[in-house]
Amino acid sequence: MDFGILCVHAHPDDEAIWTGGTLAKYADEGARTAVVTCTWAPGTQRAAELGRALDILGAGEPRLLGHADARDPASAPGRPRFVDVPLDETVGQVVQHIRAFRPDVVLTYDGYGSYGHPDHVHAHRVTMAAVEAAGYDQLYPDAGEPWRPHALYLATLPRSVVVSQWERMFGTPPDPVRTLPGVPDEQVTTHLDVRRWSERKWAAMHAHESEVARGASLTMLTSLPPWARDQLLANEWYRRVGYTAAPETTLSRLSS
Image (cartoon, rainbow, N blue to C red; front, side):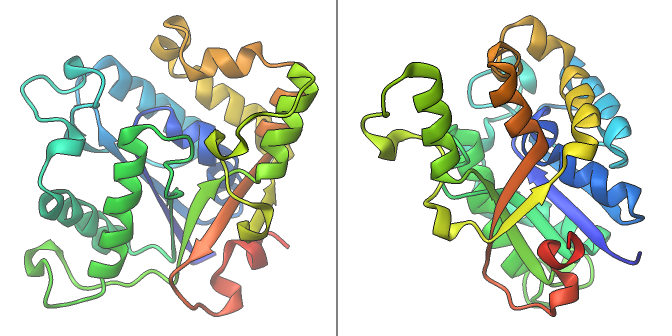
């Protein structure tokens, strides 16, 4: 399959949590897959863990921009926070990866960063700008030959799934609903059933041992009731925006 998927994520472990099933599925089907990670520097523990997770998912070597996590200066000693780096600089870095990898599809977070983390929100903004800029030969002329991906997909959650999980776990509707992750169901354009790859996705998550040890989002997933965890592991949802592509270049067509 001559088809490439490039993910742009904020932190090591996001590639597994939000797009792990997609990466494993398409790698198994022969697609080229890769991940750009905006924070954490080479040589750190989490960079090493990212390498192990990507190996499990079949997504190549880490592509680290090397900026600091907004909440952890030790992630890139001496480097500014990703959210503080001039936008033109970070867009140019992602443009360079897009032009080098030449993906058909780019994946990143929705506009809320999937759940509101400032690095996620900023990764969304940077990626949206970079996907557009990568196609212009006038922009970033030293970053490689222009390339425009066919489609951009934003990882998200259907609001109905979030609300139903909340109600089942806590017995009452969330209030207010607008503070929850996700988007209204009608904005979700693509659903991938990745249950065949859920064990690999789970293994890739646990390759991030330092995050598991400190009780981060992976521990939260572990603490969910089995039915809720299984639903999130077996399904990945996206909102397709911005570009018109032939049907055969879209995730939804390839997953049918």
